[in-house]
Amino acid sequence: MSAMFNPSLMCMDLTKFSEQITALNSRASFFHVDIMDGHYVKNITLSPFFIEQLKKVSTIPIDVHLMVEKPEEIIPMCLEAGADYISFHPETANNKIFRLINEIHDAGKKAGVVLNPSTSVASIKEYIHLLDKITIMSVDPGFAGQKFIPETLNKIAELVKYRDDNGLHYLTEIDGSCNEKTFNQVANSGVDVFIVGTSGLFNLDDDVTLAWDKMAAIFERETGRAVS
Image (cartoon, rainbow, N blue to C red; front, side, top):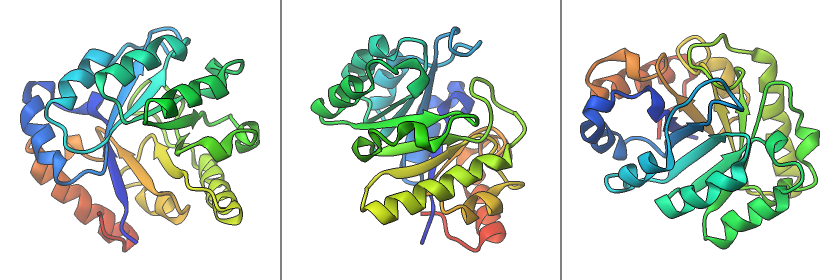
């Protein structure tokens, strides 16, 4: 089975926005957009306006990861801007999770949650059947370039087994330090989607097409699996 890749656009060269998005349209499975509010994590990155601009040139699904304290305020803006997948951290929405998932689905879009390294799979079991994607953070959220946390891979294996045992449909995804050093162990977890950023993709070459080819060659060498 070939792997799906989801470039993290906060790591791209924004001076080459149109060029890089056009090149990645025919290679990536999704475009990953991190939105941070400076409160849930001490960083500020992309925005619904970025999604709106991306929608003009993207031909693949736009996957939004909300690292914000109040996802209920940002979700409507992301839907209006053209997001296809919207995922949030359940800790930020414990008293409104079902409502937020329904809001995303009612708009005809896909809903997901993101689990921090210390957040258990058991904590989402009440609504896991409603989810289209579950992202496992393999680093603490908020900043690129952190050290990979291998213990998080146990959650991927748990989610894959639970999905298979219960006939569910969600994708599993890993976010954080996916690169040459970790591709093999991550692939062995059974994960569906790899988010790649600075170390895994964009720093491999100034030309994003060549960077992608290098990433694909590294991944296939390390794992024996093809990049879709």
